[in-house]
Length: 253
Length: 258
Image 1 (cartoon, each protein chain N blue to C red):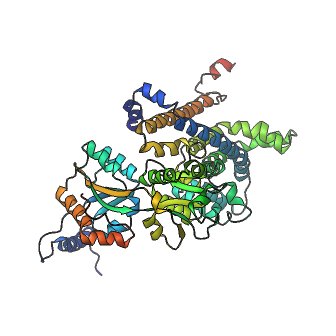
Image 2 (cartoon, rainbow over the protein chains, first blue to last red; image 1 turned 60 degrees about the horizontal axis):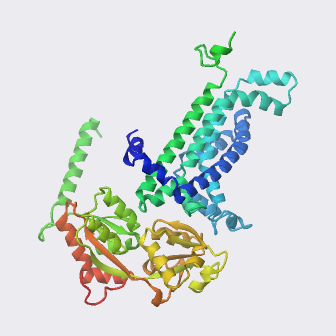
């Protein structure tokens, strides 16, 4: 807690707010928001079906596949960065073919890619647990009542797995915003194009320490906002517990 | 083998190892004890040269501005060796280091990947649209030297438009070019030499070169003042200067005062 508090104590709030109008901070915010939105959308779109598949199907090699998907969680980000370079770099395994490298060289797509790789697994792992916890009987009941698999997924499995998915997405979002090593190695750092908030802190560290502090404060507030949103969204769940929740008190008969 | 209690075995091992280490640490019979190893914060471009001058010390290589920030925040350095004179002078004005001394010089070059994918043969080719250039950011000495040389040649706008990334130290630029990630980069001649097999040098005109002078200073808070001064002397000595020149650094102008 102390390091976090120290950030806000070190610089007077007035100066902190003044730094927020600094173009460096503004550009970093724009880059971060843009790449986060796209990356998280991709994570949700691709990760949810993948997690559902891994949670509900049993097949040979399932454990191995799950391990591979979760690997980036334990991988040091710098290693992820080097991996991206040798895979998608100019002379990389995939990069040297089909103009792949020029698609992702030093632009916001490269940042999005890096975020996808390091943050995605956090969501998928949580989603797998969430789908596994869905009561099979309920799904079976829906099927016997005539609902097709897709309808069952959207009307039964997904809502029941909601809180686990939300928690996983919150972690993935926070991890993605904080991503540094893979981004700076693969996407580079250029204000307005690839310099996210995390990269901007590093760049301003020895250029203008006050700006670095201001950006750090922004990042702390973002993290708190994500956490709060997660807590609040948990309250919206219809409570199945015996201890009364805020909303169950009003709803139950 | 009889079963000895593990604790006794461990203790015996420790005694043997301890005795060996103690014996190794005893000063050589040939004379005075060696000065304690010190912590040297040095610019990245000195990564190869400094350990060759004195291999016993602990080195921390990074962009000179990063090192300065660390020293300003209390990092335990004994000596700072910066790729410019501005940074040590700034710290001297703040009372963090002793009076800096110049100790070597360098030149700026353009490097391209060995295969030269963008077909760069001189600095003007860098203004071609679509060329990807990697430089260090302006707070790092090599970054500000890059901006100086571009200003001298009146190419600032045209070249900066093609910059795709700004790194925090010169060796990152070198690595990205060696990997072929960018088409061209600005580094020191000494860095290009250290990766001779992976990059090709494109020379910059001598008339446009900024004065690249490295300066070093003893940190005032250092607990090893004598050893730090000895290190500075060693770098300035004939042998130290010869080692620097071996790696491609340039000698100080004759008769220059420290």
